[in-house]
Amino acid sequence: MHIADKETGILGANGVVGAGIPLAAGAALSAKLRGTQQVAVSFFGDGATNQGIFHETLNLAAVWELPVVFVCENNRFGMGTPQSEHQRIEDIAVRAPSYDIPGVTVDGNDVLKVYAAADEAVTRAREGGGPTLLNCDTYRFRGHHIGDPGTSYRDREEVQEQERQRDPIRRLTEVLTEEEGVSEDELSAIEAELAKELESALEFAKNSPEPLPEDALNDLYAGSIQP
Image (cartoon, rainbow, N blue to C red):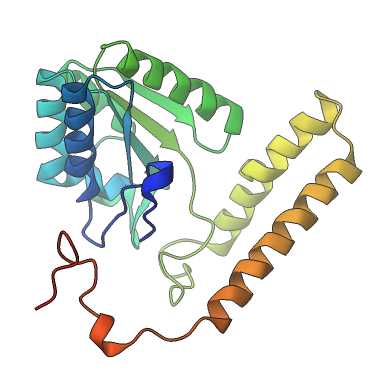
């Protein structure tokens, strides 16, 4: 969640619900003013679409025709609150016409459908067509955080059924093996390579020194200004 990497265009995030939405609009405005082909993308959940900043930003992005894609990863729960208890609507994409921008809903657990919808939205933004609201209908298999078992607001059977029917990795695996001719051995090799990469990253983190107290304010200000 709190990852930033300027080299790959990841601007970072914060813990305030919906707070990344206006930052994406700012990045899109910067790209438009500089005349680049860059497109900003903001990711958020269903709960964030109730925030005032969501509506304010979509309105301004539409007025200024900013190259930005707003992606709602609708996992059907705002923390522990089902979507039906905090919204009257089911399809979040219906909020897009209020700002005269496209609203597209796609199966968020189908990798290829998400790719196709995202490609269309990015292409539109890059060609000067303005923003798109992309609603990815998905499901949260686990709790909201490590201490949330996710059992107080839904049935375990519901989760198991979703995992059986909509696991995106399993579904993509079936497409690759049945339609694209990818072998099980090739997929196993990819999984082994990724597991090795993750283990290496974990060991690097464990073996890295603890930060010093005097470094607590580093990178909080432009130019790493110290107090």
